[in-house]
Amino acid sequence: MEIRQLQQMIQYQAMATMASSSGTSPFSSSSSMMELAFKQMLQERMNQATIQSAELNNRFSNKNVHISASNPVTSPSLAAGAVGAASKFNTYVQEAATQFGLDEKLIHAVIKQESNYNQNARSTAGAQGLMQLMPATARGLGVTNPFDAQQNIQGGAKYLSQMLNRYNGNLELALAAYNAGPGNVDKYQGIPPFKETQNYVTKVLNSYLA
Image 1: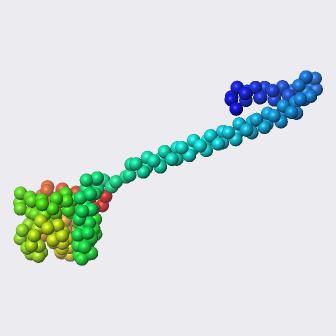
Image 2: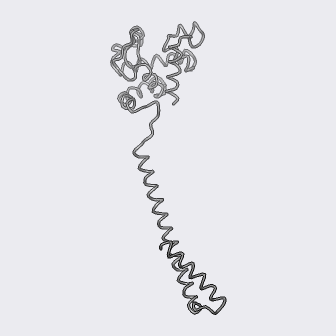
Image 3: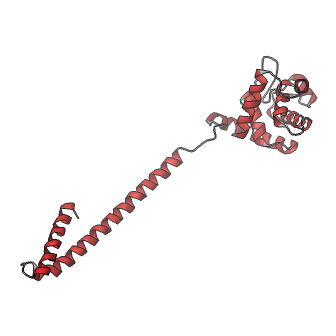
């Protein structure tokens, strides 16, 4: 019912009420019928408003579901490109994590910082592969081909596990040793005062704990 009609009915209701109390109005004979009609139309209007409100809420709810489905939330540490790259090596990471008692996410954090999942990466210092193993270190870990993803991850995870054992589970010192060597960590009795190493430890931890 339109607002104008509702206003008219309110006016009629008022007139009917006055007529009923005075008994002199020409509307007095039909005041009861008008009052009943008014109540019925008012109830109808209320029912229509309830239905419209439900339909509006339903449309809004469906819109929210659509937005959520089309805009999935992704962890900051696993941007779109990194997710695909990381999944490529998930099986090897899982194997290494199980074998050496490490958190898979920690291994991923180290790989991301070391090579950003480029298995053919090579640093100016000569570090190679996903977890950037130095040739001598790789040989000591039993890695015959540092550019083989499975071998490299196995070797890197083994070395990281060794550093954690050496420093009694202290992750910061283990990461510092992975980057700068245990000799420097022992020498400075903590994270070495190298900007590169300090930044490395911070970035890996941020990625791991994100």
